[in-house]
Image (cartoon, rainbow, N blue to C red; front, top):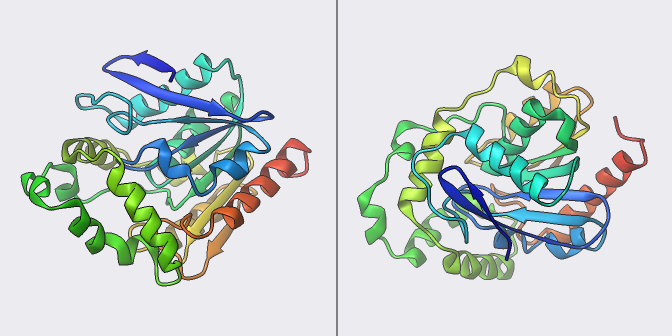
Length: 264
């Protein structure tokens, strides 16, 4: 279990598989364990590196931090793994980190896969403040409340139940959610910066995503030179659930094109 000391936090990261390096960055409050729908498929073809963002999973909590701090955590993990350049795939908050990594460290990325993210990643002010009442809400009830928007109407019920069970076992700290939300709220990129992205880019989005509406993903794909988008009909914000093999194949096909010099 590699641990990396960073200013204000200790970052947990792991790797498996062999091949061209692929860094996976998960979304708000979720640990790298939530990559389970696609991880076995991706690791069969690539050296996959995962990390837990600050305060998530096995990474230590941190005081207030910024998106830039989280991006530098990702760069530090690549350094620790001895990787100069990697494909990078992130979802939700992790997609925002992936995008920012591609803009601030273009020399470290081979390609970008942006899942359920728009160019503007602003969060309403209430989401950026810890709500003490969250600690009183049972996890089971909380997840039932968010499930319809999180998974979408086309999600297989069995796959959703399995995911919710795994999610309930994932460490959950309302303060961590608030800190990550504050970092996201304080961050907003510009279309001009997005249009300067030079890495081959694939955008993935559920067309029933209410957290980050699919129109944001479409705009993002339209603004990044050469980017393409894949939409999952009936999928919500967590389009991975019930579509692990399908999603992984879309990613693998794209990465193969990049490695072969076909994708631009």
